[in-house]
Length: 310
Image 1 (tube, rainbow, N blue to C red):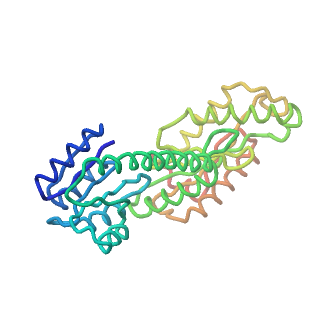
Image 2 (image 1 turned 180 degrees about the horizontal axis):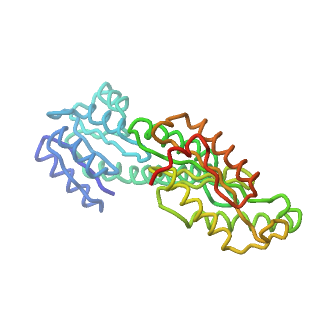
Image 3 (image 1 turned 45 degrees about the vertical axis):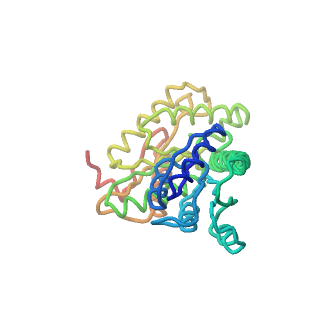
């Protein structure tokens, strides 16, 4: 573990540093609370051993600052004080400390605290990893492994807010597999699932890392294209539709004889700074137009067609 020792007394720092290193851990030291806070922010140690009374931030203030700054990580805090009264102990625990030791510091006492700290921080690391995995699972479509509608709602809100604030463009498109119900009727739902997985993999392989691709529902996919103009997004979607055609998935119920996509596109561009809900409706209506016009094509919402630019 990485351990930060904060103490304004030189001798106490030496004793604590030696005890930490003899326990097999890396040690960094600070001579006051303010420098300890800066070192904490820089190194993010797993354990902080802090004196109660120090210049700058005292031990209680340092504990509170660390607890406020924590996100997914957990720091084990040990308060060291020559005032081993009950009031000081309670104040330390209320400030966020996990344990305390009294001065003069006993290396064995600190060693035992570090053993506990290692177990506790390891458990918190495992919990953070599990929480992250569950959060990712909750935002991932199990069939296609693309992001799902929950993740879409989060990303769209963030992108729309940033674009509105800074005056940047983004495009949004809804894609739909052509005649997919007929595909399932002809080849079975298992084949339909495999086809959706192939389409999803093809779409995910296209474009920039900043592009967002989501399973919108059933055989529908949605593209979020940050910083993309209407004409740029239209070209991006044309490439995506071509890539799906190039998969060559046989579909005798489709006029082309292979699986194809249709797409409807809208955009947040100058003179069309509308809500994200409005953009979704426009993209959906443009998709309907693409279907009515014969499928296997990209249609741009008329509200934004006039803003097409390179």
